[in-house]
Length: 135
Image 1 (cartoon, rainbow, N blue to C red):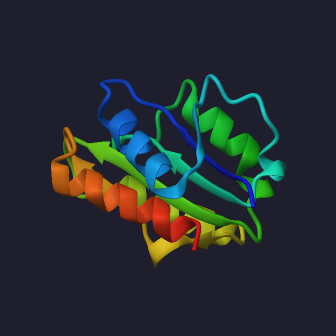
Image 2: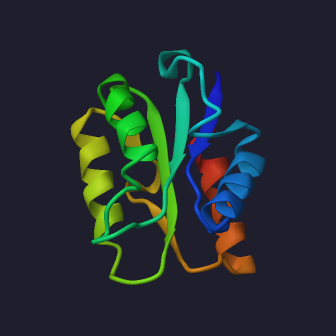
Image 3: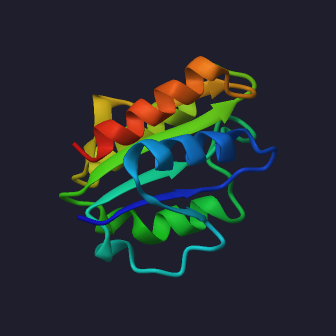
C-alpha cells in the first residue's frame, strides 16, 4: 500500500504538521508544488492546507491541485489537516464534507487543525493521524 502526504504551507506551520503526519504514517512527503505523481497510484493520502482568506483552501496552488484530484479519491483512505489563525475551523468542515462526498473514507471522520504554530501535543496528534491513516 502506497501512502503520500501532500501539503501547502505559507508560514511553515502546516509543513511541521505534514512532517509529523508523514512520520507517523511512514509515508512519502511532498509539498504540492513537488508532487508530480499520479494520485491514483496511492491507496492512502493525507492532504494538508491552512485556512486562508475567509476560511478557504489556499487558492493559487493547493486548491487548483486538489480540485484536479478530488474526483479520484473514491474508495481511498484520506486524512486532512492544517493550521489556522482565525475562525472556528469552517474550512476544515467544508473540506471534510467535500472529500466524503467524493466517496473517500476520512480518517477519524474529521480533519485535524492546529491554531497557529502546532504545539508538541498538536504534533503528537499529527503522528497519531498518520498512524491511523495506515491502519
